[in-house]
Image (cartoon, rainbow, N blue to C red):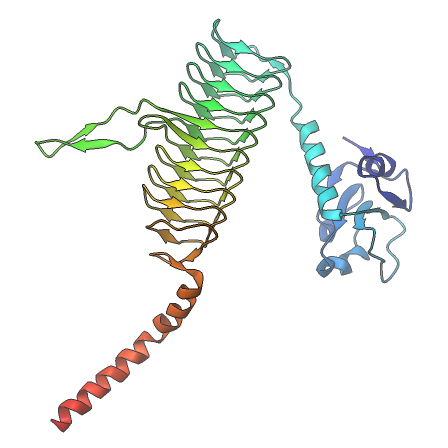
Length: 344
């Protein structure tokens, strides 16, 4: 797919400096730009590459003035915010790339299922009894949609996604390959023979609008009620959310994080990678959790946590000074003990 500088400038409301008919058909980092590629400069740490890049078009900020001439093969487009505009172009490109429609021959759709207008359903996808798919959904090959599942408008499920029965997926969501929504929560009760009886998991999962999940996430269904992933939440690859968890609006969770059953996460929280959260605790809004932190108790709004078990970050920093000095402290204590013993 090819675009001209004129088309790009019109889309971004930008000002062209150079050849308005310059064409691009690919995207590139500025240091790797080549002929017919489009790039951008937002971070001035990369300014040196502007003067050597072979990219045909580079998006720059209006308030930036090049310190030296750029190559005459490079056309500049000045915009209010180069980073945001490049992100807008990426989104536009992605929409063109993924603009699929129609139902492929090898897809199975139960006669009781309802499919909205302009949907795409790929080969070997399985749409079960009573499922309802909204307008412009994209269901890639090998997706499984269970009984009575609801999927909202403009949602994309990539190849290999599995949605168990009775779960609800909102509008404008993106769920990447291998993610499973609605398997049983980890519920077992010990009996008198010291064995474990399975506790039936009869709830569901509700995913609200504008949620994105990476590849190979697992969102367990509730024992009773619903596991809830609220509006605007973003989950990285390999995130596990257990039964009856609630994650509040616009929270983001990095990869390999595990959130145990019935934990409540507030709005606008940020979790680094490999965070572990104990079950049945509550974290308030705007909580920040550093990578590899183990959270074992509840915290109120605006807490910043680090360490395992978790500390408030200021206390962790103070304590860490002591951790590093422990070998020296132990050595000095042993020496003091020896001197005391010698004096005695």
